[in-house]
Each structure stands twice: as structure tokens, then as C-alpha cells.
Length: 327
Image (cartoon, rainbow, N blue to C red; front, side, top):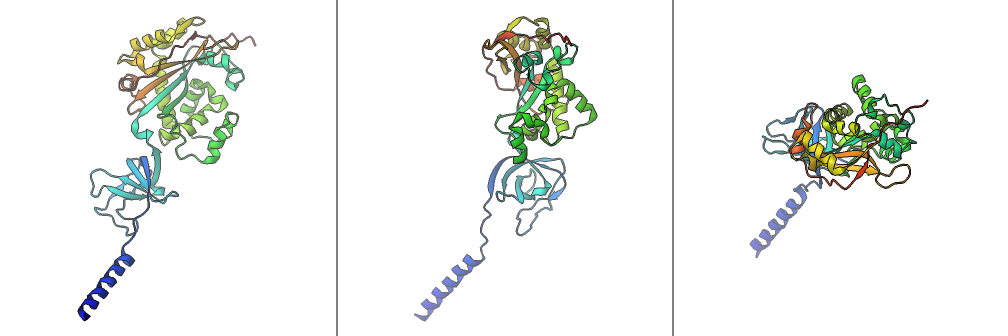
């Protein structure tokens, strides 16, 4: 009996010890996206023990898959690092930036505007008060935005204060200025007339923050794609039909002839009512589906090839010319 009691006491002590000394698992919050390092940082297997098998570090400007953060108000992110064991590691929050899953999917929508028609429907906009037939936007597509997909995956790492301002288009110019080179800023003023109303700030904070780390990269690559469309027969089709009507099918066919790879199936033609309220009478935008890694010199043909089909729609409207400036 004494031996039995002694054994039971030892079992109780053993169970108690396990209860006391086993470390509970960290309650992490799952994430789905990318972590872009801004400096070299240690990649830990265990945050608490600060263990780092293999002495692994993340490298500045490199992108890693992120799978979790240690809590809602994170101090560390859990990432996957290829080629090391174990591959799941923790890095400090100040080591980099988390970007939404859209960054990994490489699915995008390029929205290009036909400015004369846009101004016919929104004459009160700042950029529409000084229209001039000699300006770039009178005969070229202009940049609306480049949107990582899905569309609702937006405002990556943007504060609530900025988001609140962005929700009111009259306050876009109150948002913090963004850093752009003089060359890129000059191009953007020309090729995004909405710059005058703060469109460049809206597009960066809502969409660009889910595309890249810098406004400079976002707008350089957006402008490069715009330029390719403007150098094509699609732009010529619009200019040759100023004041006339085109339908979505005709535009799709020209797009197909210009870029091949079933590209005519990858665009949507957008119309709005004209100033007299006639339904879908003004062609205002082309929405172009793209897929793949975009860099400054990436061919749009390549990005169209694997892009999903778009809903072309039945839009038929006038290609509005820029009105003559009588001032």
C-alpha cells in the first residue's frame, strides 16, 4: 500500500510539473499576403526563446510570404523563408511592411479615361474647368488608376484618418503629399488630369499601397502601361471617330488587332449618361484586365495573355471631342 501511495504522489507531482512548466502556444492571427523587408533583420524560430537555427536573416527589399502576426496589435510577423529549416520564422514588425494578398496574385485592372467625355459628365471637376484642345488629354487616353484585384482589397497599411479623408473626394487634396521625382510628377500632371483634384493621392492611398512600397514605382509603371495603349491603333480609333459613335464590340476588335492573345476579351468599355441625360451615350473609360509581374518595361501584350476575361458589356456611345476653348 505504501508503494502504491508513493507512486500516486509521484504521478501527481509529475502532472503538476507539466502543467506548470509547459509554455502555452502563441495565439497568432492568420494573414494572407506578403512581407517586404526594409532592412536586414533576424528571423527567429521562437520569439520567446530568441532561437535562430542557421543564423537566418531577412534581406532588405526582399519579399516573403506572410502567414500570421503574433496578435492583433502585432509586434512580430510570421513569414515563410524558402531554402531554410525550419522555414516558418518570426520577424519584428519594424523590419518591414505587410502588403495585401493582391501583391502575390499579380491580378490588376488598368483604368484609362477618355477625358473629354468624362468632363462632359463631370463639368464641375477642377481639371474640367480649363479644358484645351491643345492639351494631351484632348487626343489621348489618360490615367485613372491601376488597381490590384480584387477591387475591395485596398488601403494597405493606411491610417483611418487618411481613409476618412479619402472617402470624401472634396478632401483628397487634404491628404498627406506623396514623394515623387520631379520627372514623374511632371508626367503625372500631364497624363492624369485628375491630379488637379487630388486623384493621384486617392489612387495611391486606396490602390497603390497594395501595389508597391513607393508612389514613384506605382506611377512610373502605371504611366508605362498607359503609354503602350496610347501608341496603339486603339487610341487612333478614338481620334479618328471624334464626334461619332462606336460600340464596345468595335473597340474590342481593334484592341484584339493591336495586342493579340485574345486581348479583345480582356477589356470592358464604360459609358455614362451625357449632359442631357441620354443613357450610356458617352464612352468615358476602358477597363483592362492584366495578370503578371509589372515592371517599367513590361509588355502589356504579356500581361494580357494570362489575364481573365472581362464583361465587355453593350456600351455604345459617342467619342466626345474636347470643346474649343473660347476664352
